[in-house]
Every structure is written in C-alpha cells, then in structure tokens.
Length: 246
Image (cartoon, rainbow, N blue to C red; front, side, top):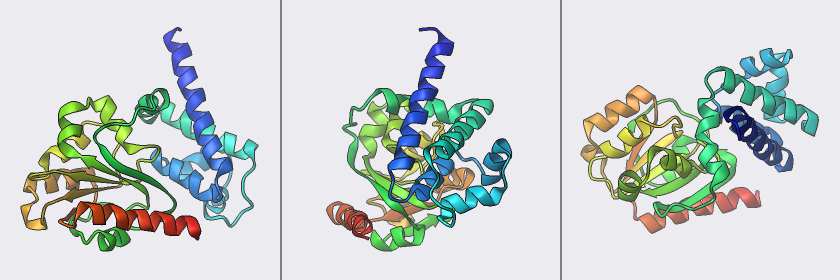
C-alpha cells in the first residue's frame, strides 16, 4: 500500500469510528462536541468550512436543534478530519495506534468513558484532590488510571497515546509518582494532551515545582490526591454508573 493510500485508509477508518459513535449515541450532540474538542477545532472553524452559521453547530451540540442525521454527521466529521489534515494531520496521526491495535496496556488500572461530561470541580471533590495548577478547564468525558512507572519506562510515545482511549478530554490519573515531574514530561512530548492530570499519592506540597511549571505552560489543570486508590476508582466508577442511569 502506498503512503497516500495508507493515509486515506486511516482517514476513512477514523471517520467511520467518529460517525458511528455520534449517530449511535443517546446524546449525539454531546458526542459531536467531544470529538470537536478532541481535535481542538472551534465551532466557528467548522461552520466556516461548511458554509453555515456558527449557531448551527452550537445548536446541534447543545441539543437545541433536532439531532443531526447521518448525512450532516458525515459532513461535520469530514470537516474535522480535513481541517486537521490541512493543519498537518497531528490529531489524525495520534489516533493511528488506537485504530490498528486493541491491545490493552498493562500500565492501565482502569478506564471509563462518560456519556455526559464531568466538570473539574466535581472531579476534585470526588477524589479529594487539591489543585496545583488551574489551567484551562475543559469538560471531562472520561478518565484513565495509569501506573506511571510502567507507562513512562515501558511505553513508547506512540504507545503512550493509546492510554487516552477515544477521548483526550479526560482526566489522566498517574499512580506511583514520586514528584509528578516524569508524567508531565511524558505528556509534553506527545501530540495528545489530557484535559486534566491527577498525581496520585502526593500531597500538593510534594508536587515538584517543575511539574507545576510544565502544567502551566501546557495550560493543563494539575491536581494531587492521597485518596486510597481503590476508593478513588470506585468513586469515579459510581459517577459513571450514575450518568448511565440518568
């Protein structure tokens, strides 16, 4: 397969994945918004690309407008992929490993996807965390609990990106950290950035100043908690189950 054919196949498979998730979701507007945030593309950029008013995209995402049909979803998905491609294709490339490998990393303790987003303040309350860096708050559509030593020592940067699951708009919770510096270094060298980072097992006073600085530069909210890990996972799992029942 030529390089161009390989890129086109990747784009096609990613588009199928995105469109399928949006159209099959109970809340297609939320799913659409999640993918737009994953690609870090503004509503105005999509509307300009499609030649529609920004309010159209906003209304679809908020549910004010009737759920988009498969044709509209396909056009929006193509717009996201094409805009990213024109900007260098960094997001498309970052999802390549997830599309072609379903192997779960041994570094992952737990991972969940939320149908409805969680706010950062709610996350901090649930896991009894202190905020080391406020960053830019984004809605959290899931979380991943990661063994930081295995992730940093055993995973390549390409494999590291698989820890995000299908949404970068998630909290990445690193366990077995000593200062918090190494996880932030690993995040700095990847194309995908989580919506929040949680350092587990550290008090806020023990967080390395350099970790805080890197979080500040990347504008990522950074939290620290000493909550029991099993209790932490159970609290986040309970939130996930509650959202499903709702």
